[in-house]
Length: 340
Image 1: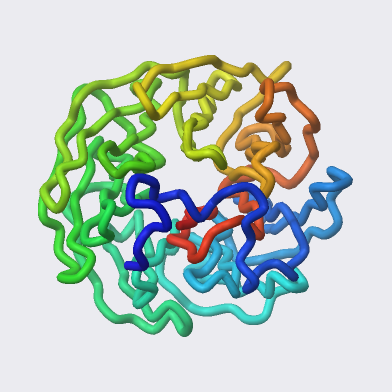
Image 2: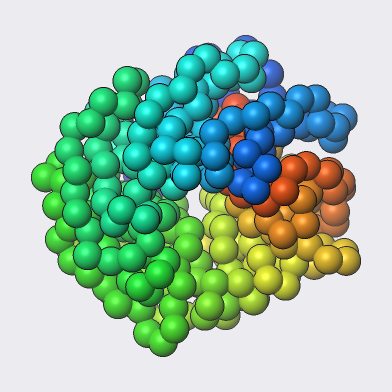
């Protein structure tokens, strides 16, 4: 794994407008997979208008930047395929057959793509360019979907939505090392590590909050407590200055802000009217949080200075894993854009 730019901050390469030369020429766009419409909507963030909607495979779930940030992959879950997009044009290049690609990540060394095959209960390690199969790892939990890596990249923590568990996976050996059962009727979603690598955060839709886990280096993390954030806690996003975690509460139409330094909730922003904020990302300059409205066929642009709604943009049905691209960083770990 490439060493962090700062020894105490995994996200030090993600500062405002710090675009890699590899992506600086790409147009700034918002890509929205509409799971129930089988389409991809492209938004111009400068005008807040839809500029293109195209058909992709069946039930697209997430739009994922490749490790080298030269490709965008649309995860067509029920279509058993990935649509390869050229970020220079936003147009599809090809379609690759891949089983059950609910979500897609990349190992920190860039040697493997990791397909979260939720329905098949497997992690498929694949070539990050061709998507040829390298290894298939059986997991004994239900609904693998989101992940993040330890500070040194040697292990990664995966959420299992339908069995209320987390699994600790060896990146090199491709082995599940440990299971962590969450208390109660848990439904874990997005996973993020703190800038200093000492804490993992796991959003839990049914527990209406974020689980805080102590990171123990290469050993499995240990559960500390649940922090109640709001109904349907779902997506997790790091601010450009590495001080704040944005938490989308899908079932109550709000965003909670967590301060990394002491794990305190500082405020909660409410989106006016009916809203269902789901997945998304932060603008390159850090001034706008973009989120899909899962149940409302719309996208939200939220001002990160005070949480007011800048725009709500109609899109297709069931918008899900929205991708803001390009973003600052040296390489991508996948999902809707986790950059280091």
